[in-house]
Length: 308
Image (cartoon, rainbow, N blue to C red; front, side, top):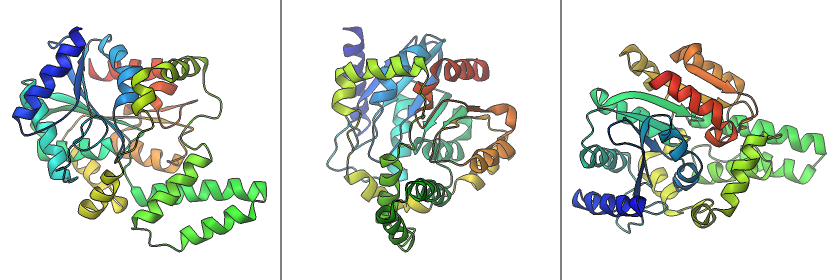
């Protein structure tokens, strides 16, 4: 009942700031705030919220999860799907909860927003944690295509290899190139670990029974990818220069990546280590794209060690 009242309270306050966001909080409001920025575009925070948010709060954090405007549980027919709009909504969360500083935990596409917000308002960011964050979109697409090509070659799957050849001839900045590439990543299991840990098996089994995850866990809001592509050209984003700039300005940045996340090569993760420092990056065995669930104990211990 308390969580339901909190969510309703947040919805009312967020509307007062010209929003219509689904927001939920976990933990003590006096603890260090962590705002979770979910992946996408078009996804939502349901899986992280149900699998990890409360357990992160138990480590001594005030965890704020929300679905971006026009995505997931925050339907909005007037959503613009622009970075300006997304950053304004983060501003509204700061106002709603009277935050002076917060940790921005950016998963996948959420890492882009974490970096952009830190560039805009560095004094408001206590630290950034990048969790399997998208940093160089074009390099990620090349990584995926190389991996699935190898899989198809090993299988002698000539039909699929022809499809990959067609994708490679497409406009790499286009939304179709993005969609087909990520589709092949999903078809070939590049998002998850090949051999999940017993810990992860239990979490995923629990999430299969969770009513919220059942309803929203695989839901995609189709207008969001199109909108962000039209307005922000997100398929060509390269956040590495911005990351270097933040490091030069002494912003605290940490990163957790799964070694079995097929969206990112070891070279990409090594570049992140070179920029922010290898002692601030954990490259976890047995974890895929949902590193916070695939190796949850290690993930939570990392955040406690870095942020407390």
